[in-house]
Amino acid sequence: MNTISEYSELVQPNHINTAGTLFGGYMLAWLDLAAAKASSEFLEKTDAWGAVTRALDKVEFREPVFLGDWVKCKSTVIGTGSTSVKIQVKAYAESKEHGKRLACTADITFVAVVKDSEGKLKSFKHNLKV
Figure 1: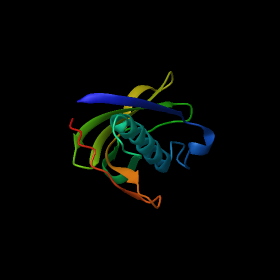
Figure 2: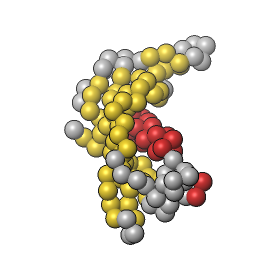
Figure 3: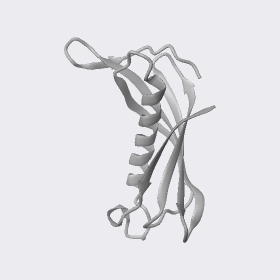
């Protein structure tokens, strides 16, 4: 397994739910962005225009995340298909007050795409292996 990229966000007041912790929807968006960055870097030497999210699997919220925590996502490519790239993302929350902990994990599948002559996206066979 090869760590492809890292992505970070600071939990701010607009990210907090009524329980006083990070709203799960923000975490899902950040996991998706982290995996998108990793898939883009994985595909950068191909003719792919980019990649789009196909599925979010095995999402597990493990620890609460609080206002002022940094969320640092570490993404690893764990599999490929002819057009797909499967990324495992581990999101760590950390602050002086709460320490560092594994807050959330997910496996996210992306499909490599190119634009056709009409500008529409279609899947692209990237021919890459992990």
